[in-house]
Amino acid sequence: MSLWLSWFFFACVLISLVSTLVFSFRYRLQKEPLSRGLNAARMNISMGILLVALAMIQMLLFEESRVRTIVAALFILIGLYNLFAGVRNHAFYTRRIGK
Image (cartoon, rainbow, N blue to C red; front, side, top):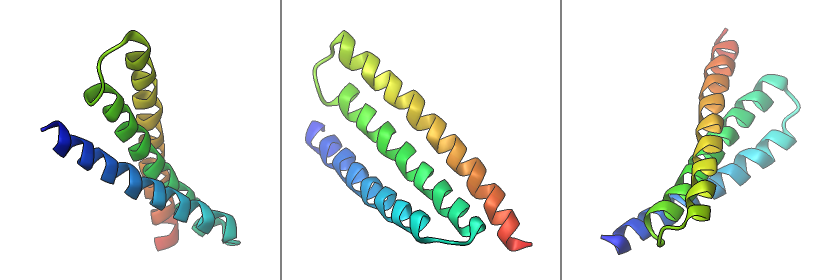
């Protein structure tokens, strides 16, 4: 089961890392503010998933230590904040573009 989990989290990290980079480049290249905001929101969602996946790797696949648990908890908190802010901003910019 550990091998399956490691491959799953590795795939999550790679996919979210690539999508974070893609949305970051799109954000920097866009001139229109609504498109920039939408790409920034997608980048935040991808980065949140990346941080949560990295925290899960630290918590589930390696032996426990106090420092590792604290770092993983911080990654989860920051990742969930990025995920929440990204979803909120994505809904805001999607509504603004639809009008």
